[in-house]
Image 1: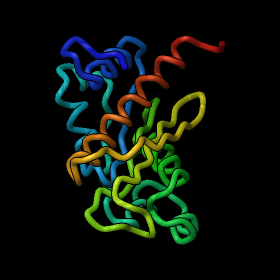
Image 2: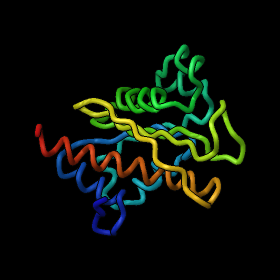
Image 3: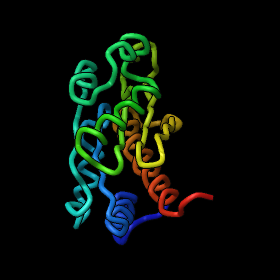
Length: 169
């Protein structure tokens, strides 16, 4: 993954977004604000970062991000379709070029039948929505799952913004 001036993926993302005049909004569940914090830690982030929503509770994913309640009832909060809907919802609600989302199980206990370490990240932008599921970190527990989700989301967004900048193949 490319890194920015300070060597971080967040700095690379901020640089790419700023250079293209694009903006970013984030929707977080298991990362609890760590994704937004990584972005705003970068000097100049205000030129591209619109804001974020931490929707830790399942009902807030519907109320604040527009995730369909029937989808949440059918699959639970930890699902690739939910990650995609979160990214699309935050993009629309915050008026950003790109929406980036995280959902998953940090542990220590399973949630909705999913083991700790199950993570889905998604990015929604002008050319559609992509979802990824990074492999669980070993070892590390909650902190490793959460930081891994943050890093996976940044990497997915950086690839997507780069692909969009390169135009059609």
